[in-house]
Image (spheres, rainbow, N blue to C red):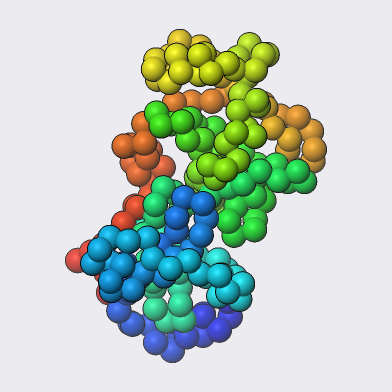
Length: 209
């Protein structure tokens, strides 16, 4: 967290929280949602300014309920999540990199959802990241079944069985550029928040100050 933010928190500790004005979309874009966007349930305007994006990402964290927020000086600006708290992209040097620019140095578990989205569970700051859909095609050849690339038919069978008919693995390059493989587990997207302990649409709670 930026030092200037910590100073503002110490000076003004009881500023009311803000809800609904900031969102993270499925491709890792931060979006500002004005009153019209909120009323019409629109995604909002994409934030392009590198300095603002960097400020948000350095001060992005979560509360004890799994609600993610951007600490904007003394105020918490809670974030509406389209899919997950983090979005990952493939990277030739680091394997996978988050929308914050941080490398996922250690993957713990890989999940494939009923809608065909890939989720990466790591250690440290990012509990779970959804893979940017633009990178999914590049990752499909890395899904292995008994050492061979998974065919589309086998993948559909695996999804229909909810991962029960065979064990899939994801082969990927680690940050050290060594080949790693991890088993792929099935997850139902309707259960993402409970599975990974986060809240897509934060709301004011009675015990919030």
